[in-house]
Amino acid sequence: MELRQFEYFVAVAEEANFTRAAERVHVAQPAVSAQIRHLERELGQQLFDRSRRAVRLTAAGEAVLPHARAALAAVAAARTAVEELGELVRGAVVVGTVTAHDFDMAGLLAQFHAAHPLVDITLTTDESDALLDGLHSGRLDAAIVSVGAALPAGLDAEVVTDQRIVAAVAGDHPWRRRRTVALRDLVDHPVIALPAGAGIRHQFDHACRAAGVAARVAFEASTPHALAELAERGLGVAVLPESVAFTRTALHPLPITPELRGRLVFAWRTQGPMSPAARVLVEMARRRLRVGGPAAS
Image 1 (cartoon, rainbow, N blue to C red):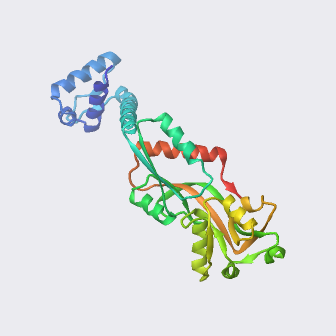
Image 2: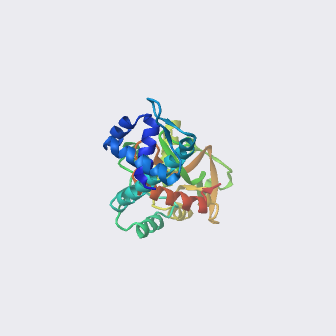
Image 3: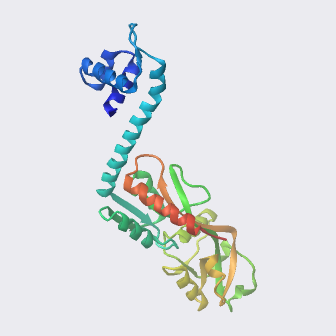
């Protein structure tokens, strides 16, 4: 049996006419008839009842039809897989990220590069709002961004971190006996925070704007541990993920009211086209995050 025999057989079955089937597969009608006869001889059964104007399947033809369709579908899927592989080898991915996070982006990109060395990879950093715009516009294939409780429309994501944001002060700070601190109380104290656009800083700034609080960020550092060191030396109130604040014995952590949460996600768009290279990268990231699990309170 040959693939074209199945192709012609399905065409005749669906068109109920040899001439229309021949037009559909772009060959002469006698060629279609000849291939169908060859198929019938190989199977030892007549597949079509040709005694009427409209060609109809025999019982044997009805039995063969789903298998012929499945064979054609399998071949089409194989061709698609090969075509996508070709695109992947020649493709490119563009990934964005906020400036501070706990995800091993370097490890992900190294793993992807080792598997697909001819794919061009671009990594860029920006504020979450700009990264989200890049995802929606298609400029970015994936990004680590800070989001609220609800994921923006048109995106899917895996959680990187989800934990409370707390204030932390040195052991001799006037707040050392307090159990919580209100967001508005930060107005009277220098704040130590991550750079603008970083995940936790993004949520902190958004909460301050919503509450009408004008907090003064006096010190910025690129990592939560660097923020903690500055706070330990009495330079101000550090805004930290609680996973860091509660591990520093020289700091006094204070949950912020109303509660703030730092939620970082590895996000990609669900609407619009996605290249084969981007799909592979996203799946690699999802496997890494599922194995490691998100950091949570």
